[in-house]
Amino acid sequence: RHNAASPSASAMTSSSIHAAGRVVGKKDTARKAAFCLLGIVVLAVYLPAVFNEFVDWDDLSLIIQNPRFNHPTWQSVGYYFTHPFQNLYMPVTCALWAGLGKIGSIETSDALGARLNPYVFHLASVLLHTIATAAVFAILCRTTKKIWPSLAGAMLFAVHPLQVESVAFVGAM
Image (tube, rainbow, N blue to C red):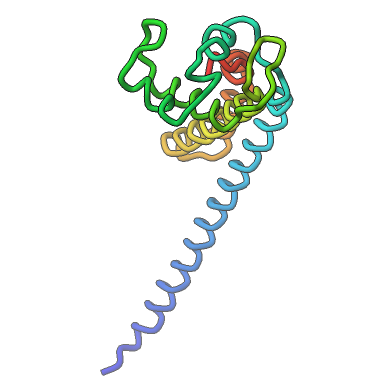
């Protein structure tokens, strides 16, 4: 048996599915464009920090004078999961510093006595901030269900002056 109402109902259903797909497609394209714009802005603002040296403040005591970072081994990466550092238990940060020290180890010492490439540490900080900014955007999109206000909020998070220290200063990573 063939129902005459069936073809038009299926045609309506089919056209509404295609229309919904176009709406979702436009939304996904806008979200992807916003993610790309955020990445470009964060890199444009903070990429100059990658070429900074270590700072003779906390970088000296936190990283350069620490033999587990300044002459790193792969064992030093896991050491801080079982041992505090300067009476602080911050194993993820210390493991990150140790891992970056292993990756960015160089042969000659700089003026502060570091045998570490500061650019590796600064680049990691910029990349972490880029990921954090993308996470802020995703959370705002999920809570507001609106792309452009979420982009504005994530952009504010990305370039706010309070973020400069945590991105440009290795010891604040």
